Length: 428
Image (cartoon, rainbow, N blue to C red):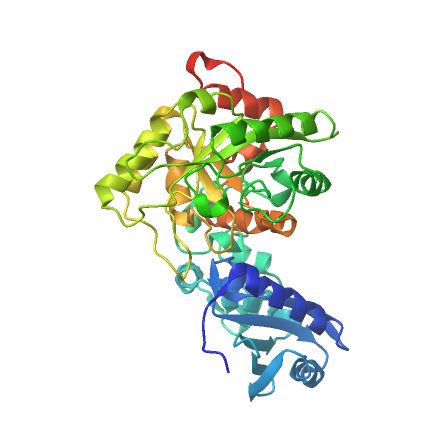
């Protein structure tokens, strides 16, 4: 049996979707929803809590027991069943009455801290709130839907991604809940690689896949020369690559392909390509790949040097973390964000499920600094363009709205914003 571990949200979603669809077709099943940290879209998930309403709990439990991925049944009662999948992921199934479904969904979604605040508000109104409903004495006054539960305690419905006791109750009371970013708001993807460096798909394949996703524009950001393991591009090869991109752009309808580069911020703080090359780019995202164990002051200085360069549009995966594998480098993020705000440099939310960098708290801090965020999948293959979904989840946890994200703009609006970075304000 695999050791217990936390699963990336992207991994957990595969199981959550498959199990939900599998259980939904069981006889008598009416509602199926995966709650817990998964529904709050946390970066990693330890287990899946599935809530079901149905006519016969025995039948839905029998169906779960026969799911192909189940390794063992851990426990089974009248309304609760736990199994472990062959991958090690635990699934907790709860069968709840229809009259309590909303209350159960709210309770088992959490977070614990958020629920404590809600129960306190209920008590102040002379009510009792639990997973079975909202009660005044013995009478249930709400519980069928989450909206009923929140209304009963004097609040509008709060999106699950915000339920972390980080000020969402106060925002709700003041009518200031954000209109959270949605996947459909994104008009482009501004970080991806091709076979020109370490990608696994051709330029044409990446462009066509992006066009099919409905994007109006994308940026091809193959690596600069420092990343030798990725066949990084020197000035000559990069210019030739851009020439191919320009030629392709003239042939492909319905999408604009920007000439970009993922530019290395070198160990000494200089940039991997000279300004005269960067001036020819449509989009430059600067990243640290080497020297990540340098002292805090040195890492911070490297990022500040990149931020101050007028040809650098954004900082890529700004903390360098790999979730569950590598902590981010030691950096004075507050100083970095202040500089980004001062110099008009953007911050990336890298949508790779193993990165999701910046994290939700850092994204919220960037929003407080009025720094536009750019979502990029860092896709190295066609299928990885789908990672945008997980960046959107992370953005939602940070309270980001469409207006906080640069690639929700039209191409004309996007170009106008970028022009502010260039000397003289010329358009790119």
